[in-house]
Image (cartoon, rainbow, N blue to C red; front, side, top):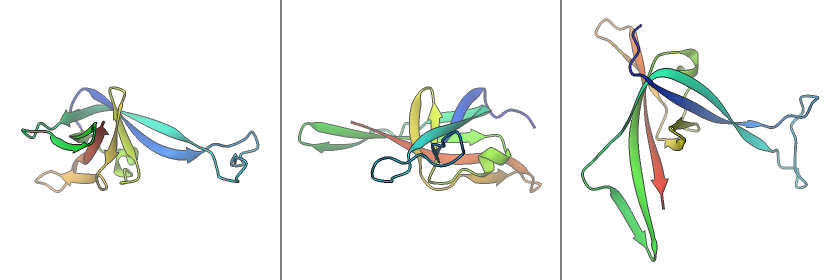
Length: 123
């Protein structure tokens, strides 16, 4: 399969922190500690969508903007497993998933690429 693009995108998921015995580490309130685990995928195409005027919400002195992005990734076991609970990381920015990623097929019905829609809020 040919590469879709030449960008590198991280698939970020939350995993429990484990001690040397493989048991989850908990804080004083018995809440499990977590950390981000990142799987990097090469050969992606990540595009921030320019939709004319950016979506802006103004509340007092805080302005919030939404940045929508599309990501096309090669089909792998990791990219097939992207759910709405995960995040994507591109050039040190983290984007929340908007739904599960989907495998898109070509006209012959073969897997072609994985498509993900994500969003980053600023402000």
